[in-house]
Image (cartoon, rainbow, N blue to C red):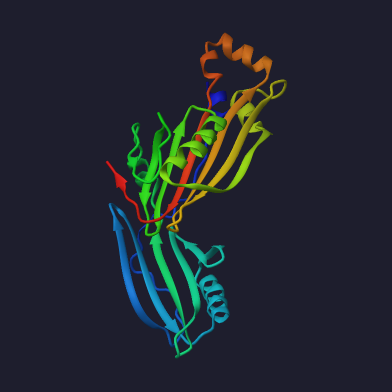
Length: 272
């Protein structure tokens, strides 16, 4: 059984639904003036957004943060997004505004949810959503409201082909239009760690088989919904299958799991 467990591919996702980041002191341009500050709360998820103006240009602001954030120990995850000790800071610079020729930029600071926070929102019967369908019979891994919309993840035993077909059809009934699609691709990799865990030094082949696909939907009111679908499973050769079957583990050989990741940008809410 341990060999099968090791052979199964589990997917983990970074979720931009945050706990409030307190007492974070980030660098600012010397002439920066705070325009507004907003705290967005939804259950235990909270995000703080601060907006500033400065005479610095967009390029100068981005260059300053790239240098100063690194100096203070922040790692740049992607352009304008930094992480440190479980916290996230996102810098977004807007074009110059008004006759004063000043640049407006925002700083979003937050703490990423812990594993315990994610597990707390796990449900065998998923919450209902008023803007899109939930895959029938799926299990909810997590669901967080964010300042921009919502992030959610679900598991199902159905194949990636069935899940992809379902959303391409069912989303139409909620007013969505498919704007782009990443076709299903499959990759198979050896898993030497699985063989080692199973006590097999040679002669048995344990592989990880993973598939993925992506769907992007849009509505006329500016809403967007990205659905990423992942399927992972373990595959073993004939000699390993016979040995596990002899040990009474044959029922585990058909294990398979598909994970659905939803990133929604809009103003709709969760309905219970």
